[in-house]
Image (cartoon, rainbow, N blue to C red; front, side, top):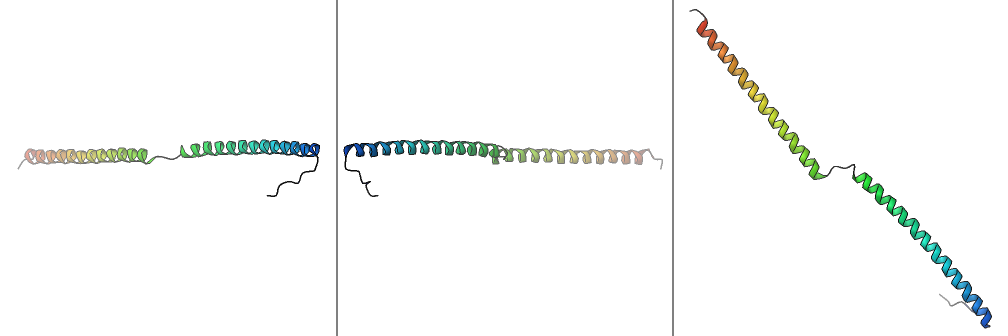
Length: 104
C-alpha cells in the first residue's frame, strides 16, 4: 500500500492525520459492531444446535431401552411357557382322572 501523500504544511498534515484517526476510529466501531453481530448469530446457532441435540436419543439411552424391552420379552416368553406347562398339567390331570373314574 502506498503511503498517503501529505500536503506540505504542518497544519495540513495535522488535518490529514486527524481525519485518518477519525476514519480508523469509525472503522474500529464498525468492526466491533460486526463482531457483535457475528457473536450473536453464533450464540443463536449454538442454542438452536443444543435444542436439536436435545431431540436425539443417545446410544447409551437407546441401549438401556433395548435391554429393558428384551427383558420384558424374555419374561413374556417365560410366562407363556409357564402357562402352557400349567395347561398341559391340567389336561393331563383331567385325562388321568377320566381314565380312573370311567367304569371299565
